Amino acid sequence: MALLGGMAAAGGATASASVPLAAQPAPGGKTNFVVSLGGFRTNRTDNWLRISQYTFNPDNGTVTAQWWRWNQGNMRDIRVDTPVAAADCGPTQCYTRTPKRFMSGPSETVSGTYEVDGSALTVFWPSGSAKLEERWTVNTVARTDGSVDPSLVQLDWAGAGSGFTATAGYGFGSNAPFSASASASDLMLPENKVNYSYRYSGISKGQLGSGSSSMSLPVYKQCRDARCIGTATKTAAGAGCTYYPPGESKENTTINFYLASIAGDRRNAYEHWYRCLGYRPSTGQTCYKMNSHVKPLIQVIDDNGGFRGWVGAETSFSSTADGNSDGDPIGDTLSVVKAGPRVLSP
Figure 1 (cartoon, rainbow, N blue to C red):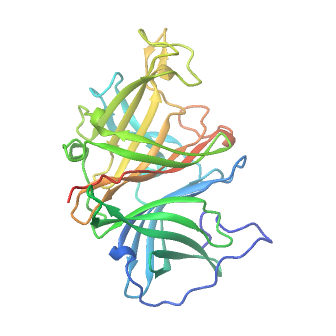
Figure 2 (cartoon, rainbow, N blue to C red):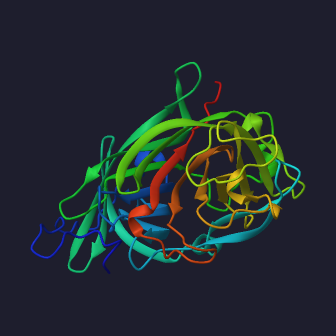
Figure 3 (spheres, helix red, strand yellow):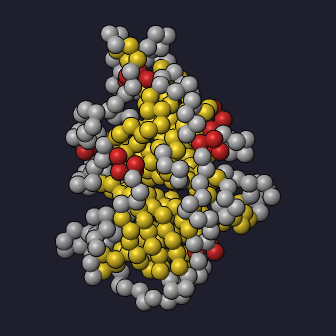
């Protein structure tokens, strides 16, 4: 099985040789990981990404992944409404949107092997007669006093093997089952309603970009539908707005943020867009249905069942109308993201 368009082009290098099955330690003592991985290159339209759940089996050194994946070619995606309405949690009342593929369970299951050498984790995925190689560093997570938090480990991207086009990734692991999750109401509990350090790496309009910000749950509130939380902030408008709602202007307009629990599992649909994009003087305020920022996220849950953050992706494929992704691929915004982890006290 060829994975993600990840092999080098014909005539390029081949992937690493196969690895015999053998017992291996669980990475950082953990077996269940949530992972976001992508391959991004400037001024190209063959970029790709996936968000995954990895299960490691130390008895025989195997790993099984279930994932959702996207690329700029034959695996583009459209934005769709989730069944979760964001009402009474911001200035607009709209359904939270997400990529259509994320509304269903993982689309692929793949089995591979892995090796652990100290803090170095190498994962091998089949690709025809060869293998694709992911390299990670397994790091501990610190508590507020600097001591080691035993309930969670973090994966830091350490590069790809020859022939694999992955360039960036994030991951966290614990021994909690993937059935463990946090509801939108849980996210509003005092222990979870904190600022989460946010990082991203990817491509937008053909240019590479990475950076950090904050996902600040203290400014969110529960929507009328308890499966959703939302907020709004004011900032200068980006490109695309011609008209502005009463009381707003190009220098001071609203961004709507919605986050919804869409299936009672670890999936969250995260979306944000400028309110002015959905405003026309003739029709008033409507819900924006084209190029909003859509970010499918998977929750990070620790050994004790506690919510700690997210890994995920931005899958904002360029659209020319509601229900398509027919825009020029060079205009896509794709990235891998993480938010957290929430740091615990001893």
